[in-house]
Length: 87
Image (cartoon, one colour):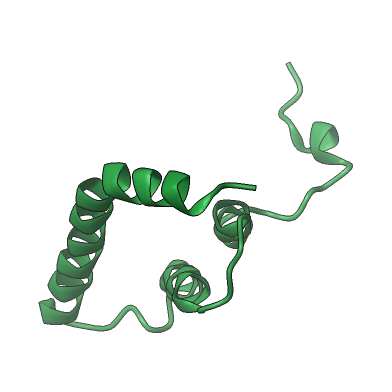
C-alpha cells in the first residue's frame, strides 16, 4: 500500500500533466458542442460520457484505467480467428 507521502509525491509529479489533459478534454468537448449538429446518438460519444462518469465517481479505486479501457473495448470473441480474412 502506498503511504501518504508517496501518494503526495505521485500527485505532485502528475498534477500538471493531469491538469493539462483535463483541460484538453474540456476543450474538445467545447468544440463538439459549438459545432453544428449533435453527437448524442453516436455510440462513441456515449463511451466518452461513460468514461468520464466513471472517473468522476468519488470511490477510491486503483483499477480506473482498466475499467475505462473496458468501456472502449469490444467483448472477447472466442471465434475471432474465424472472422479473419482467409489468405
